Image (cartoon, rainbow over all chains, first blue to last red; front, side):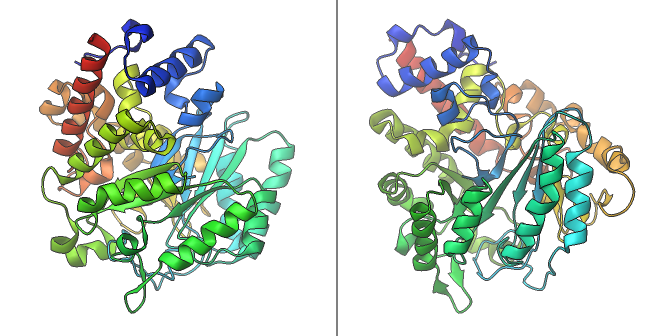
Length: 76
Length: 359
């Protein structure tokens, strides 16, 4: 089992500022009803919704609104 | 069928580069006809109302069919969008053919653009080359600059192989200097790469070490690009579910691949291989393709994974990894050949985050 759990992490106890910021972005997005699995790094910061799955062969992290999942073989 | 789909669509498998690790390696491939593109776009985008479709124009080199091909694509899509169908276009290119006309086209038509580049010139030119082993870096960089001039935001995608895994810091530095979001993808033993496995495939632990080096640097530097490259590892550990196709429990609910001749496969990575051919997009309905027995077999993979996947601490965020990368070890129900690497990445990042949050 994974030992980490976002909701149990107290942001104020995170000494690393970058990790604290990541946790904050994810929690804020979730609080606004955004599925964290559909956030990109930028959309998380902007509290925007990424509407579909990503693929490994594609970089998929731009600010524009994705309409479908990210794929690993693509990166924008 | 009732959720967003990403279509990895190959207008050609031909390419003007001869990268040593190419997962396609088919320079004789023909180009997709406009009729086939029309079939694909119309059948998939209109499968159900109000559900998004993203096309990743992939290759080969997807710019080879020319700008007229994509002008036709946009023309086909416009009336569908006007009817309310949600369609997005993205393209993964080697960047060498980009000129102001392409940049303008991408900008005007809101194409997401990914550029494939493997790091600074000396590192990139070890593997990303034209015929005759001529490094492609200068041409790629020129394409990237043109995109930037036209305001087309684009990310970078780097393939990590034995040729560059020891140069991970140079790659990270390069991405940081260029202020790019990026992904680091491990080399796959398919296509042209099969001809040089000894030269390309990394020794055990090297890929995971490169990703963990990136994680350590992010903890110290907090670079946004670094965060983007680690997103697929860090976020699943925090939220308890995967966020990228590689680790999806059932990627077949969200992805499909279309080859240049219209043949439909589980994903772009399967294109050109016979066994998992679902049919041809120009024949029959999309429903028939979606209900193909081979697709059903693939959707059952999570239940048929080895016992060790079910017992693994990271099973719920890894799900046996990429089906293609399992298939390459002999059976679609096998775990991904990168299992050990992923496990080391997940467990080490988890431990380091736990150490920080428990302090």
